Image (cartoon, rainbow, N blue to C red; front, side, top):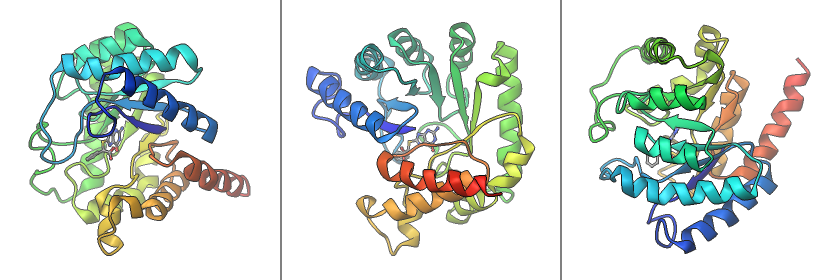
Length: 263
Ligand code: 7PM
């Protein structure tokens, strides 16, 4: 899954023609490099970032999704926790809703996913949007993520979402300690064994827990760490990795696939 950010800080404006053009170029590159899904997001979940309105977020992502859907034959996911944005994104051609709150911020996400029969990524996170990166520590992270997955799956069922539309995500970097981020990747096989019917998505790409291990490496020096963690996640049972560096990840994953075949 290639990450396509459509925020004003990532592209020239955010919603304008330049943005659509830049995003299309990026989409084409990702597709040529072997991406299977494009994840389009219009709101930064960076610690301390302010929320943008649903209208503003839709203005950013919908034109980009529409342009991609028109030109390319690749599933597009929309990285949003707002049902109004999901609705617009799906109307524009998105087939998957990627919700970092697993329907906690806006229950309407479940309703849209059910009615439009989209895929739905349920990611583990805690707290409200503003306090998400500042939550009290919990002791058993694997147990906590398991519990939240079970309740999110049950909630999805109440909305009438098909089980085979659901993808689970441990939410690396979201209200977890450094050790917990590492533990979730190292012991992902335990979680995967608990949820054999659901594909697991993992997003480690360029995240700060990698920088912390590598002598505070800045974001542009976290590629090798990103590849190592993506590889271990897939080896431990993940089916999808959400990444900035598609070419390098596809190469690494190609090796993993042939190695897995040897088992
Ligand atoms: C600051 C903090 C900026 C975190 C950006 C981020 C995930 C996601 C994000 C993930 C799924 C990033 C994240 N992370 N969706 N959206 N899984 N499903 O690094 O791990 O892109 S935002």
